[in-house]
Amino acid sequence: MIRVDHAGEYGAARIYAGQLAVMGGRGPVAPAIGRMRAQEARHLAVFDDLLTRRRVRPTLLHPLWHIAGYALGVGTALLGPSAAMACTVAVETEIDRHYQAQRDALGDADPELSAHIADFQADEVEHRDTAAEMGGTGFPVMSALIRAGCRLAISVSQRI
Image (tube, rainbow, N blue to C red; front, side, top):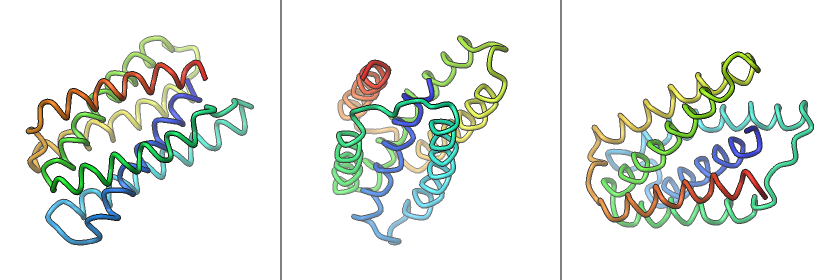
């Protein structure tokens, strides 16, 4: 769980970095993306610590998520603010589902990890809802592809 969550938070941070590289501080959604990026950085720092303390090997696909996340961020930002927000809605929808499945599987077995996941899940739901309010409800084909990509990334990061 820690390995895949670390990979996901890293990918999310890279998506927001790519979007901000295109938008800078300009545009109607840039401040929201900046806030989301800061929260993802906090999540990533926690998972970095958990990897070290619990001696969990990070995914071997880390270099791929570095490039893929950034490219997704740049690509959606180039399509405009609504596409960037649609990307967030798609990603965070899958992350909410993923985190809920983890919480269900954990139960009371690991209170520390469960508490982090619950905290981060609340942030991800907030990101999704904010992005939807900011015009991220369009782009159904792109959103479906991004959601499928997220599910694939989760699956392979669990194994590799």
